Image 1 (cartoon, one colour):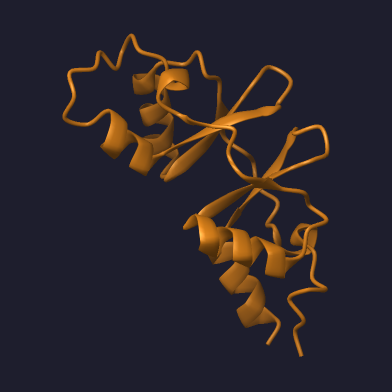
Image 2: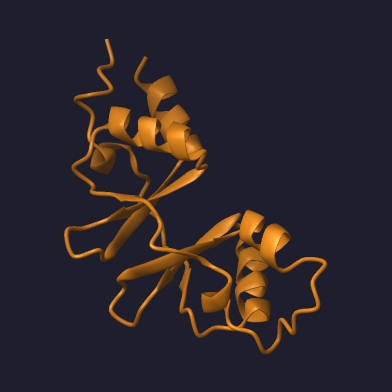
Length: 134
């Protein structure tokens, strides 16, 4: 029987190339990355890969769409969600599910003890792991 308290996030995450942006990138540049990679969110990091924020489809819809914002000049740093919730890779699957549920997140940033981006955990990653291990 699968015990969600024993399975670590590092066992669940699929190793993939991570797409990130800097908070100094323009909104247009970030949206182009989201569109070309078919992602719904992107982690905003500094030059040392430390997590600074996340920019999501919801951020775009709620903060930018329909407003008179010069998206080819404005930077994503002004519209991202700063200091997003993160988990360490050693956290349990149960902790991740709880954080995702309480925060209503579809994605959860996995960062090390220095807040350096390790990976992103998606609801799909969790479901795939559960289905494969039932």
